[in-house]
Length: 499
Image (tube, one colour):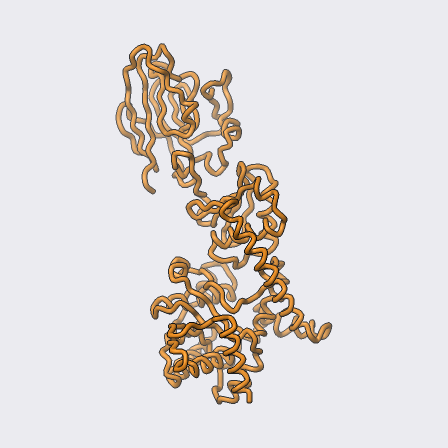
């Protein structure tokens, strides 16, 4: 009978992949359709034997008015009849999609996973069970092919995978939530047959017939067409998925061994060593980049093969070259490294000097600010202490070139003209870096000093009436250096304030 065969197959699949632990609390996502309804029914039959505790979660997307409200009622009644607690949520998917500027499909997916994470957090569950079937796997693999996914995308859906990070990303990461899919060996037709056998009368979602959604067009138009070319195209796509999964797993294991050597994490951004990456095969380069992307964004959603290739191209691009990718991710070629950061960090990609300044997070100086000499001056992101010091003959001169990354500098007070002020760099700025015989454009100095372009507008420039006297953290002007003849010094100390 269908009942016994399907239950046995699902049980074997669950045991083979170790998807369910005894005595475990699990959230079951139930839409009201045949797949999730049959899944819930099968799981409840195992509750007494395994001791697992189930909690149903249903989200009303508010896209189908009274129809979606009736779906919610059906799920609530079904859960009650099976003796399973239920949480029903409602989210305005259309409004969220407009606010995010994304498709209805993407908005629904984000809100759905966000809701499931919230429910799991409320009930203390570590696993969320979803009724994805073999048909969903076929459609997912085909969708990834059309979108130009890399080999990892061809794996499709896994029996067990980390919960995608959406708005509740921090919560999900803290909980270590997993998504499990016990029905990946079951067809959609089999779940319909199971529901008929048990008189479960699942709901039919009318939006599944709407051809404005890509997945629906694949299911209703493209797959039927492909079956005219190859009646076994579903099996071919599933076979491709299995092969890709095996190959991808091996490459990923090798890439993970190299992560500690080639990648470093810094305040939410990932830095890849260009020189060491250059000696790796392209497959390992791509997988290391993929791992870095997941680390920065939380998952690889919307990141396709061409995006990974765009990042990989930065390994051989000049310093300063940059690519912008989905979800606001920004990647930049720097001296000796490629930096991958999330979009919310684009205006302040975290970077440090040896003294620990995250130059990329320093606020921009919007206007000139005069310094109190002697005294204390507060600037956006900084506190500046200025002191004048009498110097005895024979004292060793301050050698700023040996302290390039320091935030303290000393100057010959009597070589300074007028008041001292701080500003950001300006077009045409020039100065005579300490130790050089001629003036140099500030821009050229920054390039030669290998200062990343994202830092340059954020580095304070200290000036007197006569011009630039210090590019903070790098070099003072040669004309104001301390010499054996200096009798009185100006000492400036910059301290980074907490943001």
